[in-house]
Image (cartoon, rainbow, N blue to C red):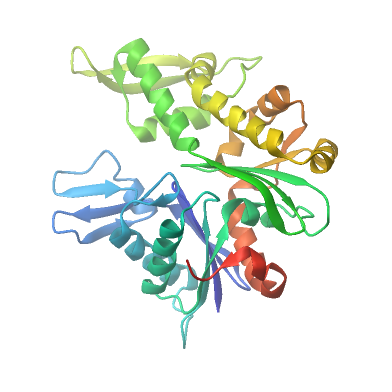
Length: 332
């Protein structure tokens, strides 16, 4: 059995050969005071910001890399078991895990070791932008340039790919989590209202936009008043959220421009013809494709089902192992 895993800062997706994506859950683990795992995934995310003192809900990955090795290993074991639903009758499955393009050899070794300890027979790594490009069905095997921007929870993976290999890549630590933090900070400064990460994420999803909307959206936000210390509710507009996310969005577009500036001229010509493809959860932010088009002058569009691109790419790479073997890492 072969399993592909999109090991993201915000979510983990598991692709099982012959079955497709079988698991799509938040990468959150709840542990008790004695470091025993209480809950994983969706159940653990429900506990974020709501746990008693004896339980802590944590994200074991930060900015796309492992921050807590032991918890990551336990989380991987849980997702591999859940993804295969006990269908592994003999032997250990081959596992392919996605990692940020800018991962160091130490960070890669952590992921490989965690995958093996979690039950993998053979463990391989694939860089996220490569997996995203494969999953988005870009024609990367030919001698022409393809540009992918995979905006995850912790990092944005920006790459130009040609002949099944990465020509230029940048892993920039700006993603969905940075947008959430910017929203929470803006509301705290403007309204003296403290909100949690989950509320900030909900605001981003419901009324967030990379550019001002023609018809402004509004949302009621509840939190704790920082002066009175009591619960309070305020009405927020989509224009305010666009303003709140201005800095992380500018960092993202600057990183994209930086990769374009390093791209060889012949490949730049291909990218002008084909455009920039956006994947990852961050690509679902309203008008982010229009913002990137405006800043770079290159047409941008969101891949079909952007959340699943990396997971699908890991699955396709495993199924056509010989074709993509040079893009995979089995030791670091």
